[in-house]
Each structure stands twice: as structure tokens, then as C-alpha cells.
Amino acid sequence: MSVLLETRSLTRQFGGLRAIGDLSLSVNTGEILGVIGPNGAGKTTFFNLLTGIYPPSSGEILFNGRSIAGLRPSEIARQGMARTFQNIRLFRQLSVLENVRIAYDAGLACSPLDALIHTPRALSRERESIEASMELLEMFQLGSHAEDRAGDLSYGAQRRLEIVRALALKPSLLLLDEPAAGMNPSEAMQLTEFLRWVHGKFSLTIVLIEHHMQMVMALSDRIEVIEFGVRIAGGKPEEVKANPRVIEAYLGTEGELP
Amino acid sequence: MIGMTPWTKNRYLPPVLLVVGLIVTAILPSTGLVNDYLQFVIVSIAINAILCVSLNLVNGWMGEFSVGHAGFMALGAYASAILTVKLFPSAPAALIFPAAVLIGGTVAGLAGIPVGILSFKTRGDYLAIITLAFLMIVKSGLENIPYTGGPRGMLGIPHLTTVAWAYFWCVVAFWAIRNLVYSKYGRGIAAIREDEIAAEAMGVNTRAAKLVAFVTSSFFAGVAGALFAHQLQFINPSSFDILKSTEILVMVYLGGVASLGGSLLGAGVVTILTQCLQPLGTWRMVVLPALLVLLMLFRPAGIMGYRDWNWLKPRLSLKLRSKNEDKAERGKEIVS
Image 1 (cartoon, chains in turn brown, red):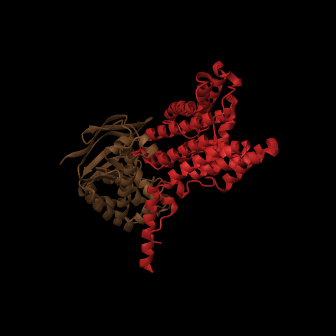
Image 2 (cartoon, each protein chain N blue to C red; image 1 turned 180 degrees about the vertical axis):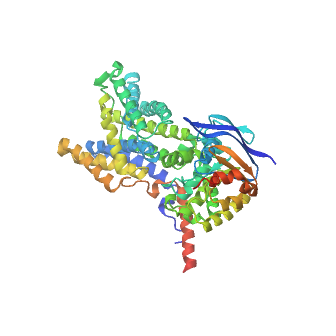
Image 3 (cartoon, helix red, strand yellow; image 1 turned 90 degrees about the horizontal axis):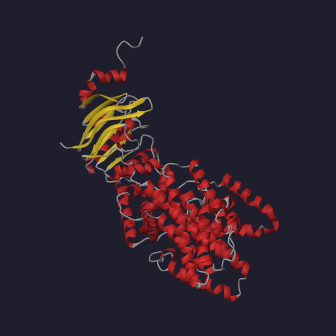
């Protein structure tokens, strides 16, 4: 099994706080990796380091065998790493279609001059981006909302659109930051089915941060557990579930409560 | 309704309108139908529309707040006037004027590069301060250059801005900025306004988008400055102070942010209103800002904020809309 993403002694310091410390993980091509840990464990910081929003204080990130530490987020995205955000970050004022097109456009070569005078090249890119984005939207039952403002969609549809937008980058790796946040158990189960379908359909590798344990256990091939920025356990879902350190991290040690 | 094409979808209409408009504006002054004053107002509307749509690119579509637009305008005005007054005073107008306007735009566009680069790391209030500083540097710089007359400015600029030229450049500015807005870069610029971090994460090269926005915006401000100089025949540094920037800002926020139609509307309304309110003297400077306060209370995005007339949009985006409408129609038929 080939390794798609690897971090080596990844560290991120915020002033005196060590948000991520010496984290070495790898993600295999095609798998779904769950990343769990208590609140404030550094999971989202981990994603922000991978996608280049923060540069690492030290350590290496290898994506497809190439070092991506220190690259700008847009460069990393164009290399095939797409993400969603814990609190939805759509372009709310723009249409649903424009949201998807912005991500799709990243892969299109078009110079500023082409854009300014709408050369045939620019126009054919425009057509391509509309058609491909519409196709993607139809696939996710959002086609009829193409012209609506993204901010006007229902909460569930916004979550879905964020995933569609990420897919428009044609990623090989998809990072999902708490996709089930704010969903009830039955919605979370629906999302589980949905993600499983997306994973197969787009032959993706997925890294998933999630608090809905049922969902993580059902989806993940492997799980890594982080606490205070440090990896404390990892392995198959059933192994992780039985690991005393994980239970301790989540529930505290025995006899702590009076 | 089968087979009917709305006139907005006719691909030959815009070029035909452009040519007809150019002929009309070229003939108009010699017919005697419009007097000099009316011509002055029409040219002013065109120049203001260029200023308004170009500032709208940064303040509306990109959602930043630049107050330095008059500075770019000044650079265009001075560069073009140096060409027509100092360097080639006896060159034929038909040759020198297009070149002067283009060079005015280019000089201003180049000045947009450092401001664009500064916008990589700063935004919001901080960027507004930077553009203010830029404006002050340009104005004080011009006041200290004896070659262009220092604070007294440049006199005796030939009157070359005809109605036809103003119309032509206005169409070019709207056409280019429309093209940009409906392109990869334009959507990237709007994405920066909505959420810069998400834009980067979705592969938008925000630095390229910001540079394109600032350079295009300042280029057309320079073009407008060149037209302005050859309309008034006199420029001095204080024609391009913060008040001038404010005037353009008023047009943008009155007409509507991130809107081509709004830019046209804003420029038209403000220019005509300023003329109509002449009898009020300096009190007119009270009426317009008061209007702005009312607008901010009831319509903060301006009259046409974030919307546009169909005839100003490219055909491609309209085609999609009609396709979706067809689908919605079919859906209705199935239901009924």
C-alpha cells in the first residue's frame, strides 16, 4: 500500500503553547483515516498545517512524496488536497454554482489578459467550468439551486455544498473537519452513507476529524488519536476503542470523580 | 414562445450599439443639438463612470476599502498632460491623444503594483490607511515637482476629450471590467471578499487576484485622469485630493457595490445631481452626503448592490440561466 501523505515530527508552536508536538503520521492511498481526540487536542491545527494555513514550526509534510511544508494554501490545494471547514466557510453572497466554479477554476490555465479581453481561450474555459460544475451539482442534487445564494441554502445543503466545492478541485486527498457537526444521529448516519459513496465514486483518500464516534468507527479503516497535540494511540477502530489510554483521554482515569 | 430570442441574447447587438454610439457621439457636437455645457456634462458622466466602475472592482467586488483612487487618477492626468503639453505639443491630436490616454493608464497601472503587493498582508482598515498614505505621497510629490508646475499645476492642456472619446473609453472600461468579473480572476476576487482563507484553500491564488484587481482598477483610474485633464484643460495637485476620492466613493456606494449597472447609475446620478444643485452653492456638499446616510440606512449595498442588468452580462452566463429556467418550466409542466 502506497503512502499518500506523511508527516515527520510535525510541530507547531503558538507562543508558549505547543499545539502540535512531534507528530508523525502517514495516510495510505485509498483509505479513510479517522482523527479523534478531545476538544482542543490540536486536530484542526493539524488540518491547518497540512493545508498550509499555518506553516509548521518544524518538521516535514510529504504529499505524494514531495515536501509541501511552507507552500501557500492555494498551491497545496492545486496539488490535490481539498478540505472542508469545521464552521462552514462558503462564499455566502455568491451563487451555489459560483462556489463550485471557484474551486474548479483553480485547475484552469487562463492569463489575466485572456480574462480581460475574453479571448476564445478564456471563453472556452468559462464554458468548461460552467458545464463541469453544473454536472457536479446535478450529481449531488444541488442543480436546481445553482443560481441561489449559497448562504440561503439549508444547513444540511450547505454542508453538502462544501463537500461538492472541495470535490471540484479534483482532489486525491479530502480532509473533512467535523462534517457531522450539528447533526442529529440519524442525519449523521445518512452522512456516513453519503461519505462512503463519495469515497468510492471519486476514488478518494479521506482524513476525517469527527466527534460522532459511531460515524468514525463505521467509516474509518484506521483511527489516530491525538491529545494535547501528541499522538497517543492508533490502529483499527476496534483496537482503538479498547485502548486504555484512549478511554482515559476521553473519560478520565478511574477514581478521579468523588 | 419557441424560437423567440430576447434582444439581450443577440450577439451582434453590442458591437452594433458601440459603432452606432460612436457615430452618434462623433456627429452630435457638430449638429448644434447639444450645447457646450451639455457636452461637458455628458463627458463628465463618462469619466466618472470609468472612475466608479474601476474603484468598484477593489471596493465592491473585492470588498476592500481604497481611498487612494484620486492618486491613480492624478498619475494618469499628469503623465498624459506631460505628453501633450511638454513633450509633443505640436503632434496631431488624433495620434497623440490615444497614446497619451494609454500611457496615462499604464503609469497609473504600474503604480497599482506596489499597492497591490502591500495588500497581500494587510486588509480592511489597515489597507485603507495604506491607500490614504499613497494618495498623500502622490499629491505631495506632485506639489514638489517644478517640471509640472508644482502646486500651481499645469495650464494650457489642449481640449482633446471629445464626447466620442469619452464614450469610447467608457465602453472599453466597462467591457474589460465586465470580462474580468466574469472570469476566473473575477470569481477569485469575489471569493477574497467572501472569505479569504476559504478562497486560498480552494486553490485561488489570492495574490495574483489582488494584483490583477489593483492594476486593472488603477489603469482605468489613470485613463479617466487623462480624459479629465484634457477636458478641463487645467490640472493641479489639489484637484486630486481626498475629496476627489470621496466623490468617487459616494458614486460607488450610491450606485451599488459589485455592480456594473450600479457604477453607471451612481456616476450618472451623482454627476447630474451635482449639476442640478449648483444654485445651492456650497450647500450642495450637504445634500449629497445626507443622501448617502439615508442610503446606508435603508440600502447599505447601494441601489444595485450585487446585482446587474442582463444586458451588461456576458451571453454565456445568460445561456445558463435560460437553461435553468427551461428546466424549472418543464418541472412545472410535470407537476400540473
